[in-house]
Length: 197
Image (cartoon, rainbow, N blue to C red; front, side):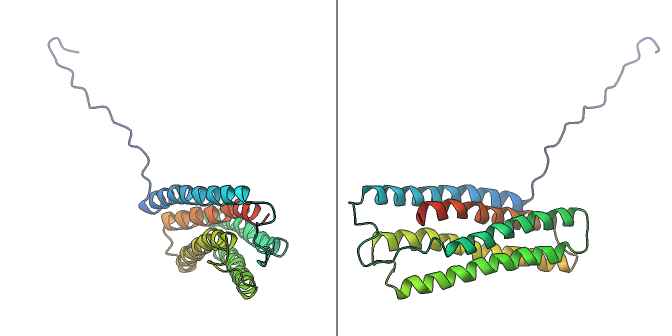
């Protein structure tokens, strides 16, 4: 190098953090808030049930929750989550049957919601309502909130499936719908074991 020459340094490149899509970020924030909601509701249910006098939970004349029959619903929902994992792997490999496997996961989830509806109709006909007892109030609050989440997640998954079938699926939409569905799937066993038994 010649004497007196100045060396100019190029600015160092700064590493950019990975960009998270707004669908994914919004879904994650929503799930954190919903975990807090369900934690509070399940805690209140547990405290009320443990504080009830012997022989008063459920109140005399109120039906018992159909825990055995709900095992089928639970199996459908858990199977739906497993099938969706397979669908995601197929989608990442650009396998053309990914949208059919996603539809299968959606159908299993819809079966869960449908069977829950049948269960509710049976419980209502036996006198378990939102105002009939503390069990009815908590049951419809907790299980009903989960059902609303399941329906919304099914809508999101259905939109993702439709976009996937048209080859127009944005990865953030599929990931957001999957994340929300996995939340619904993984939350249910906790509700089932805590509320039904």
